[in-house]
Length: 83
Image 1 (tube, helix red, strand yellow):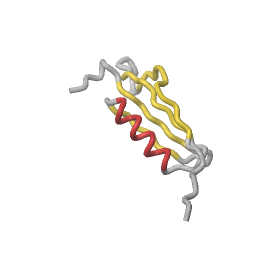
Image 2 (image 1 turned 90 degrees about the vertical axis):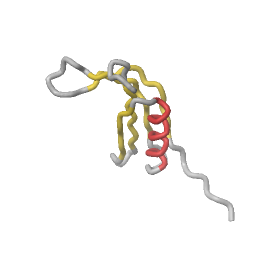
Image 3 (image 1 turned 45 degrees about the horizontal axis):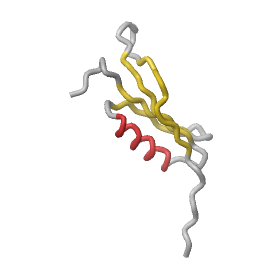
Image 4 (image 1 turned 180 degrees about the vertical axis):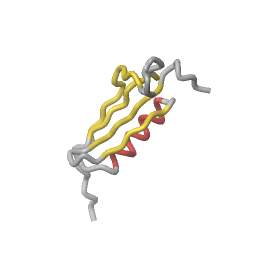
């Protein structure tokens, strides 16, 4: 079981055209995998990151307090397959 006092992991991916996706999970490995999947669906040059987050219990609307960035990735150009 995961308690929100331990924190969560936020992942965000985006490209230069403004397309992208993001999410929150309780597992670092899952956040890393989701980030990689998201980058594969975006154009070369897309970037993404995984950050540690905690729930802000004092905010009037539900929100997160973002902490340290744990992983940064960039999608490079696809390699053409040889025929």
